[in-house]
Image (cartoon, rainbow, N blue to C red; front, side, top):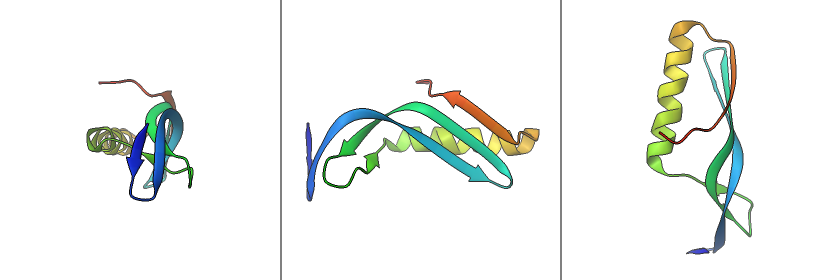
Length: 73
């Protein structure tokens, strides 16, 4: 368990959706710290960079919808 200024967080998984220029990417089973008091999820910065890179690649290749299980790089 991790403590934050306002509450605690426990490891879990979430679904993350990104919309960019008419492209939608959905990542399932994303590891996260989920805050007990708000239900918010916290992710590592490197993971966010990876999603943004995936979104850019999808937009440039013409993908409209991409649904995938999160894979650790």
